[in-house]
Structure formats: C-alpha cells, structure tokens
Length: 387
Image 1 (cartoon, rainbow, N blue to C red):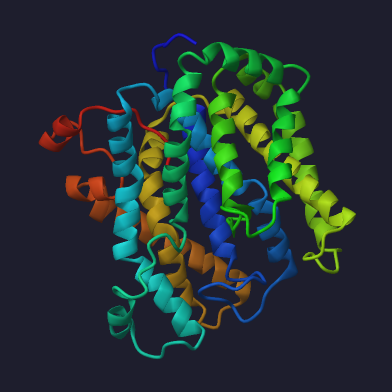
Image 2: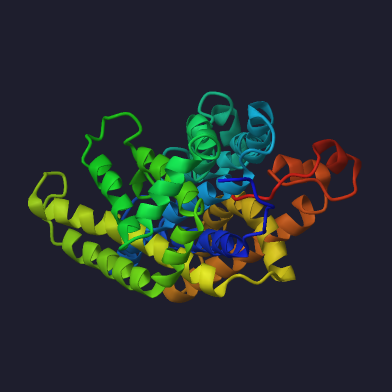
C-alpha cells in the first residue's frame, strides 16, 4: 500500500452532506415519535415511530463509516502529535464550545417541559453551571466518541498503512470476492449480544457505543483497496435493495415482539435483520455515491465546509424552534414543516453570519481558518475530512 497522491473523494463529501441532512430529518421527527425527548408534541404517530426505528438502522453507522474512510486519506501525514492536535481542534474544541454554551438550552427545555423547572432560561443557568454541565450529552456525544475511537485505533491504522499493508491487501481482496464484505456485519451482531452493562454497550443513536468503533474501522478498510471499492460500486443496487428490505423487515418483526427485554429467537432474528440491514444499506449508499456522486461543485464545497457547524447547531435550534412552534396550534404536518423550514434557515444564518466569515469562530467550530490569513498560515494546510 504505497503512498499515493491524495485525490479528493467527492463521493465521500456528498455522503457526508447527505448524512448530516438525514440526521437533521431524523431529529426533526423526534417531536412526533413515542420515545421521550426534550420537547414533544402531545400526539405521537406510529408511522413516525417506524421511520425513526428504520432510519436509525443505518444513520449513525453511515456517519462512522464515512469518518473511517476519511481517516484512511488523512492518516500518515505527520506524527502522532500532529494527528492528535488536528483531532483536538476538529472534534474536542467544538465539543467544548457546545458544552459551555448552547447544550444548556437543551437541558433547560427538558427540565421546563418535564415540570422540573419553572423559571426562565437565564434563571436556569446558575444551576446548570457548573453543577450539571453536560459535557458529552445532547447530540455532541458523537464528537467525543469519534475522538476516543480514533485515538484507540490509531496504532492499528498506522500499522495497516505501513507494515500491515500486505495483510490489508489480502483481507480486502477476500472481502471483494463473492460479496464477502457483507459478512463484516457478523462481528457487529455478536457485539449486540453482549449484556447492556458491558463497557461501552450503552445505546445512543440507535446502537451501542462499542459498535461504532467497528463501523469506524470498517470504513477505513472499505477504501483501502481499489478492488473492494469496485465491488461495492458494482453491487450498489443489490446492496441497497437487500439492506433496505432487511431494515424494513426488522421494523415489522420487532413491533410484533411482546417483550423486547426478554431474549428470544424472534428477538435474535430481528437483531440480525437490523444489523445486516443497516450495514448492507451503508454499502449500498457508498456504492451509489461512488457511481453517481463523483463531480465537484461550488455548492458541494460550501455544504461540505458547513457540515460540522450545522451539526453542532442543529439539535439545539430544532428544539428551541419546536418549543415555540408547538404552541401555535397548527395541524401537525404543517407544524413539522414549519419547524424544519425555520430551523434550517436559522442554522444556516448562524453559520453564514456568525461562523463562516470569522477565523476565531471557524476555529471554535472545528473549521480551518480562511485561506491567506495569518491564522491559516500558522495552522498550515491540512486535508479536509469528515467529522
């Protein structure tokens, strides 16, 4: 695996942008499903609950796979110190900014709507700081666990790109034959059988944290060999069809289980359908992107740069906008459309007018400084990568 000139992977950029929009759509639907949330509509809809369960089968696995794929192209440019510095700036600084600022609003809205606090937001802040500050909560858990897993995997990934390149070539060669890449879902399924009190088996985003470490590793391996990439591209429609059918089957089977807390053959079947449905769907999305989403464009460049600030802002803005819109008495479909439209406009306005144009804010939100500025020269050029 000799080092090659870095070629921009526009398909990964497209997937990154579309993945964040999927996360935005997913969270916008949380007002109307059965699961508890910071702010809720007083009526929940089985169809929305089915969508939440269905989309969570592949949403966060896709995001970690994209992150792993981007790591392959970013790794090896400098030593461990530079690598950690880049990850701290890209992931931990925005996490800290969120924890010290707007995550408090999410916590306030939860306590306000659940009858745990009756005052206004500014009266709430003294009890939030520092006693209950939510360092890794809300939706920003993703940044912390991505950083943690990247650091854990770093020695292995460096070996993969160095002395272990022959092993990776043989492994990817085997995975590229006879759809063997689908079998990478099997270790994920075995992990799902671990007890919930096992380390890192707490659920978030629809999956236990520990499974995301493997999705991150799988993403790295998927782009390490051209044969495997070609196989994923060639089987794109098969993967998408099989994956979505299995994910849909999981929703149907799971809703028929009387007590999901009790282990049964039906529960194991449902779990297998979810794991392989989610994993194979991700392969389908990657194959489609490799076939159809390979062209650069100014819109893609703008959107790709906005991904991380958009992600950092999106849930807090959705909850704040939703809190007020839910009081307007609109029909639920119109209400949801209003929440989505207003939230999207607010997020993009915040990005455009408070983050994108100012180097200090860009750095605080995990972005590179503007080209040609003193800050950019001090930071030095670095490869764009996913969050």
